[in-house]
Image: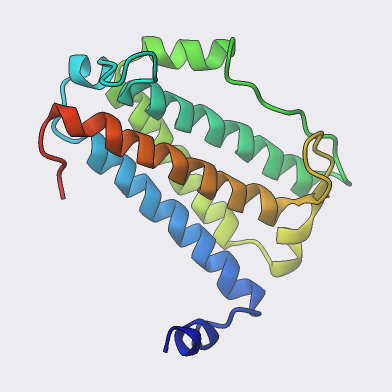
Length: 173
């Protein structure tokens, strides 16, 4: 039965796969909103797991990493096999600047960027998803890989947000 559903969705239809990734990014943005809903600035900034990022810091990271990945996508779409730098959040002044802002402002920026990214990706023709770039950690790096990696990376942090949110009261649903 599950195999029938997978085949019916068109596993080899690249456009369908790309559309699902875009939808996943939209859905995950809704989860970010849900996991900080109803919390004060102090609660989002509280480190509920010692020595680990708070909800606020995770929102800031998701916004910053999305900006980095958007830059990679645009570089690949606009150039021939561009060199893409690795990203290390430790010591990133743009991450640190976000942490100083109210969580609501960073969340609003994240959501605006996510909407723009989803629209941009939804408008890409299938061949554009396979424009390549040179990344120091990955031998086969194209727009598809970049965007799918973003979705998986974000899912990992959503799990962390879920863990960090739990001690602050019931999780909204």
